Length: 379
Image (cartoon, rainbow, N blue to C red; front, side):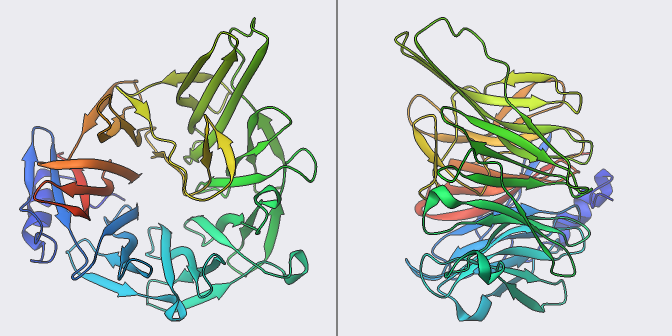
C-alpha cells in the first residue's frame, strides 16, 4: 500500500515533516512533484539508497572521510542513525515495507560482511559459509518482504565474485554462472517472489541471468545488432526486477574497427522482448569497486537503475558539460530529467511503488556536502 494516496495525504505528510527533514531546504513544489531535502545532523554527506512504500528511507552518511554510519529516515522526518559493531563502514542498501534493512559493514577495511537490521532495531550480522574462503565476505544488495536477501561474495580476487541468497532462516544458496574459474557472477536485484537477477562474464561479453526461487535459471543477452565489423562486443547487465518480472538494465555495444561505442538502458518484458532507451546524456554506469568491465569502466553493485511495480524506472545520466541529473522513465517510454530546486550533481538511487524517488545531490550554496532528497509525485 502506498503511503500517499490523495492530495490531502500529501499535504498532511508535508505538515508532519520535522525541522531536521527540512533543514537543508523548504519543500518545493514543481509542477507535478514535490522535492523534500534532508541531512543527517552533522554528516559530511548523506546518501539515501532505498525507499519503501511507507516512504521510509535508508542509506549511509559520512561521519568522517573514512567512517560511515547507517540511517533510517521515517515518513515523519525522524532520523535514526546506527553503526554495525562499531565498524569503520556501515552501508545500508535496501529496505522492505516492514522496515527491515540489509546492507554491509566493515570492521576491517575492504572486508564487507552482511547485516540485517529489523524494524525494531535489532541487528543480525552474517557471512557466507567459511568453507568458501579463508576471508569470508558478504555484500547484500536487496531484501524482499519475506526477509530473503540477495547479494554477493566479493572475494579479494574480483574474478571469484559469486552471488548468493540468504533465507529468513539464514540458509545460504550460492549463485554462479561464470564461464570457468576466471570469470565472475554478480547479483544486482531481487523481487517480491524471490527471483534474482544479475550478470556474469563470458570470454568476450557480459550476459545477464534470471534465477527463480525454485532454482531454475535463464541466461539472456540483448539481441546483437550490426556486427559486420571485425571486433564486436556487446554486454547486457540486468540491474533490477519488479514483481511482474520486468527487468531494467544497461547495455553497451563496441564495434571495432568501426570504432563506435554505445551505452544505454534496456527494459526486458517477462516474455523476453527488449526495449532500448537512453536519457538525454550518457547513462551512469559509475564504478564502485574493482570488478567487471562495462563500457570501459568497472561495474559492481550497488545497481544504477531502480524499477517499481508499474514499470517506472529511475537512474542518472551525465550531460555534455559533465553535470549529473536524475531521470525517470514511465512505462510508456517517456523520459523526464530532474534535479531538486537549486540542485546540482543529482544521483537517483531508488523508486518505490508510489513513484517516490530518493537519492542525493549537492545544494548550490554548499556543494561539498551531499544531501538526501525525496521526489514525491502529486496525486
